[in-house]
Length: 245
Image 1 (cartoon, rainbow, N blue to C red):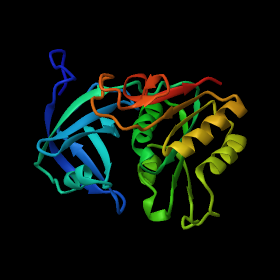
Image 2 (cartoon, one colour):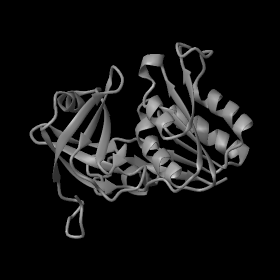
Image 3 (tube, rainbow, N blue to C red):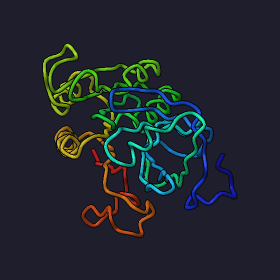
Image 4 (cartoon, rainbow, N blue to C red):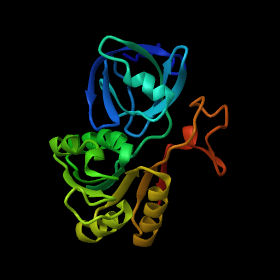
């Protein structure tokens, strides 16, 4: 448990309490510790002898991560089970800020993880939350049941139409929901192309938006410069960037 004496820049050991397969590529890891963190913030996870990588928080109390197997580090993560230990630094970065009473969340692929944390916080405050979960196919739709359990209105779209809806990309589905639901604010996390399209939509509809962007990060604290995005650093100035309405 983080307290006033803990330095977030030093690795904190935690033990895996539960591992759950969410999709063919994604596992949920529930740890035995908690952090004082805001939705949208991230942690650096260290596996000694392997590497250290950034992950958005799916929940902070207890710390919960959704990890997709995409490379050497995450393959090592997927081999871990209940009782294994890992080390965390953080939380780092700028998180989401809740605004408005009716929110639209757009999750592309693994981007569902930080938005589940945001949806939980918004529902606790009594806000209406609609969520679009997008993926390339039905079996890769992530955390749909989680959002429903939180009391969100859930919509899905897939590139191949295997969810029973006509094939379509996330920006097209979001524009349809902007027209039909008329939310107060848009929140999104997903691939860069999807976020660029949603930023353009937000500006066109004069809708406040907050977009969580990914980047290659090494230090997590704005020192190494590996996550430069224009004149900003994703780890320090993001990962959540605000688009004014």
